Length: 211
Image (cartoon, rainbow, N blue to C red; front, side, top):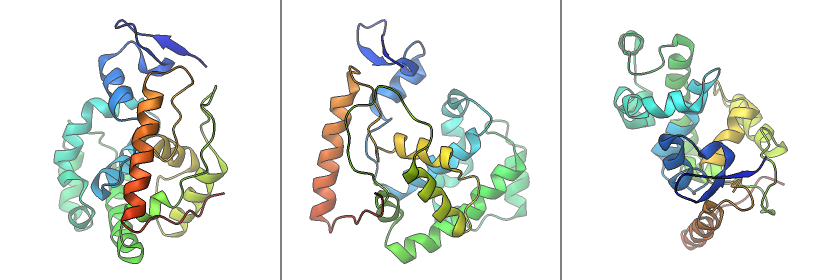
């Protein structure tokens, strides 16, 4: 895989060129570190909803998802009832898949428990940040670390969190920087990751479980 030049003359990862929604997401979100529990929970849920679909489909519905799922606040979503499930199944603004909707409610309950155990979802997820490496020439879909994260989440009762979903989550939330060599966003994402690491260490740091 390679970088591709966009209409603005900037070189981007090949997948981030040719669609304005993808370009904005690639340039400002993907690979940039996220430490907000609601955004982390949102992303791992949306990755589950993406299963079998394109990310562009989910991206274009993201604001609708946020409204439908109360900003992806695990404390609120964990209290959703069958009435909410039926409401969501009638919502044309989201992906109306009962299994994925019910999994999101289940995962919200598991997220509340996990945050209580570890202090925050951020502390848990960032403990799976792997050692930093060189810029990739190819983008993997699964790694040993994502497999370990998936296995632990499933052990805790989470659903729709396979190793491919887990790695897509890690890439998007900045646990890894998979912007390709030559992509203009790579250095910006790496700088943001370093600043995030410094800020996290000042707040008590993260303990990595990944190897």
